[in-house]
Image 1 (spheres, rainbow, N blue to C red):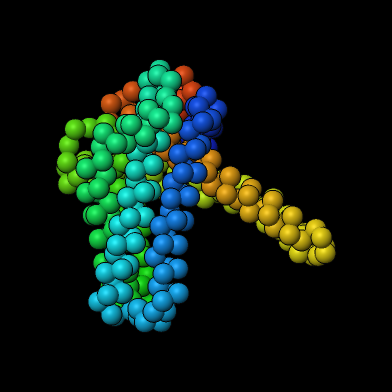
Image 2 (image 1 turned 45 degrees about the horizontal axis):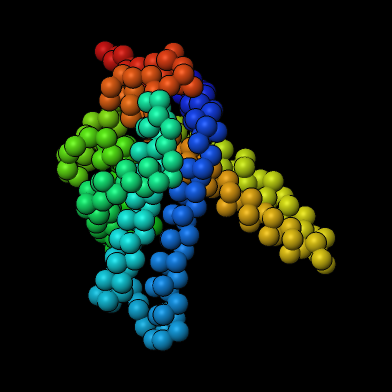
Length: 277
């Protein structure tokens, strides 16, 4: 329970940082809008012309189209994530970031973001192709490998933003920091999942109540519920970037990022475990 408690304390600290820069919530909003436009630009032309059934699994063109879509979506997500990390780093070190400065920071790392998006899209596609060819147990193994990949690369965006190294070196560095922070890394995923569920419960309840009531209440209830879910996802995305940045700063430099992150909490979260013989 100690790590879970530390995770929620760090989430609270991340929230205090976000309150000082609410305009940065525009970055995950822009990322989401860009992703929707890209996905629609792939799906709609295919469905309106040749039809989705033409591109079937196993067809080389299917995987080419899938890779291009993966790559563009990865690039968008990583770019705006890097912008959020740049802004969080600026705030944690006493600066006053803006949306423009955050995007400018990401633009300075554009080539690295491009290369990392290519690597991430390639890994995602390979894992999907392998999973399609395996039985039930094999699919579970591949999904566990995918989860391990997600955890090991949890800090790669802050590394790319802060450190002047290439993608492969950043991947190795992320693996090193993962060994140091694996406990907080895993519980962070659990913590964000729990917070997400708690935030979405009122929206699901409102939608269910609207569906039960029916009539003129139904569509407003659904609309309000969907907007609530989207806003909570935006906030969680920003909190995640701040959390990663604080985690990276302490794990790599031993720095207490700001007054919002108590040193004793960070020390308890990342203190190495003693070996048992």
